[in-house]
Image (cartoon, rainbow, N blue to C red):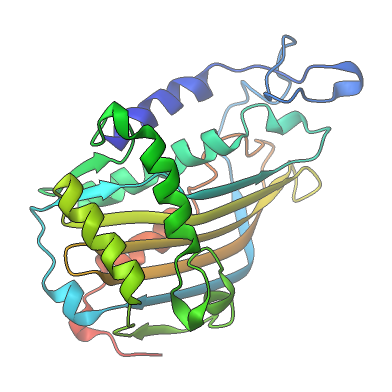
Length: 275
């Protein structure tokens, strides 16, 4: 399950390494031999959230028939963009893999609270997928990203959600036949009911933000009823997170996203009106 990888990520974050290379530049792998000046400080990372954009939509009928004991296939983020300046003391643990591990930890925690009986299976070779499907899953990720969805745009294109900033709505969005068939095929092939898919995650580190640095965050996160080929819900979240404390944001980048995703999991849709 994905929470196993999240646990490994926690171990990864505990192992603190510093900036390497001349002039304080960080090597490509983000790790170095010198002691980390930003690690070991006591206290929590405190962030101020600004410049926020948020959109969510849900399919009321698909949500109302949620089977809380079904199996959900948990995809790693299909597209992760991790941006950082060449010289960045707080970026020693920052990478695309670290971002995805961190997001996985948040997802698993929320799934356990919302659907304690739901079995979550990681969609990676050696987990839900047999090892011989490793090449297929890479192709599958690309097919999903390039599938046409909202406004005739590729699923990876966040434009429809950015333009709907501030909207929360019940919407029985039609899923194009090609994407619906792809979801059906995944459900049948791996005996799944649901698919959780972080479609796109983009995080940019900025040492100049706040008191001790910060970052900008953008994500498209979705849950699908793969058996029926329907979107259950989707949320877009974008914000700037700037530190208000001396502790740099060298981990737990997904923490501000957790309450925003939980807002979807915990909402009583029967009492929610479009706005």
